[in-house]
Image 1 (cartoon, rainbow, N blue to C red):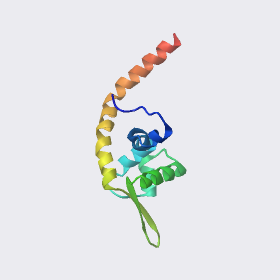
Image 2: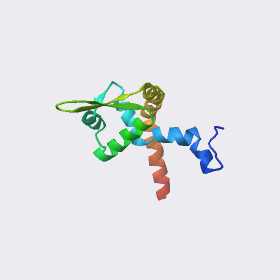
Image 3: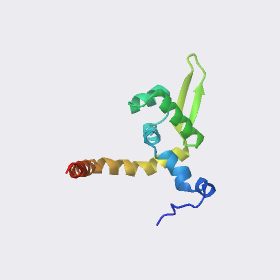
Image 4: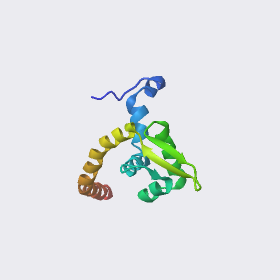
Length: 125
């Protein structure tokens, strides 16, 4: 079994699963990394690519990904000022590991939908 258990808060902060994986597997962070696959994008481009994310949530998640070293934020002086986000080598490495999960998710969607419908039907009975 993978080492997922910890005995203290201090131990939890050093656990790779809690410290690293939990920060990149959130809904928005994974989608942001995928949105930056083709190269640098401005904030508005990232937002349009994703669609259903608020400006505040996107900003928070971009900052978190930047803090952890997955992307860079580059400001080009204007006028107008242009801000670009781009994956770092660490972000590219993460992307390459996310892609198989994305493909798997796409392939399994019908199976998951069927399982959900069956579960919901059984819960009504």
